[in-house]
Image (tube, rainbow, N blue to C red; front, side):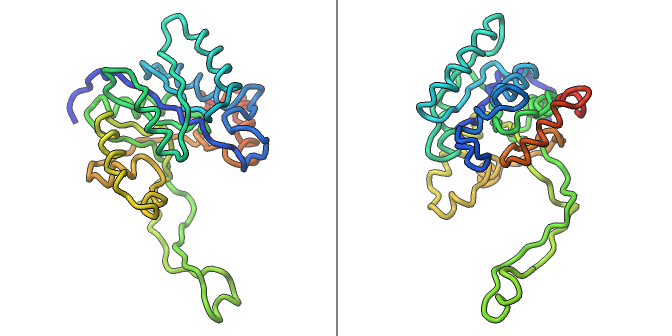
Length: 259
């Protein structure tokens, strides 16, 4: 990698999820966490990190409540904060990311794609991803070591199905495994190229793609890994929300307990 080069960086915040598994009957981004919607925690963390020239929030189409919330936050940013842009999400996460890329301002060099559900991601994680991009990487993801033993399984059939629905087929090498988080960072032209190439995937291939980094891997472009954070948990279930509340109630506050 070369010496760090300043980059104009946009952050796409994917906040268009329905939140059905949380059970609040509202979009996940609007669910309260510590007295504020999940989305607000995510936005404050991004702005506090200082990495973004623009923050593009991808919202559920037609959700006026979240739009008003973002509008109020935009007024808070009037004094020198990043440009805040709002766009409607698409039918899939990939569609939402593409909508966000289309709204990035001219001259953007790099983009960080971040899940609003990882609302307590520390500023240091944003810094590590952005610094790797500035040093010359085309794609960077934050990761954590996997602490559980991971097995591969297959569905049972015939008499075996009497015992259990699945049977173990192997054990993965834990030393080579990493749990992937966001923000995932890319040079903008790399991510645009990856999404264009994905247009040629069939439905089954598209369903197997679980993050933007995987699309970049398909190009043959190296994806580098930096250290993530245990605080960057993804709020998906009611239990996740309880854990996140616990982090906020910690003695130092979630973003400063761990780098």
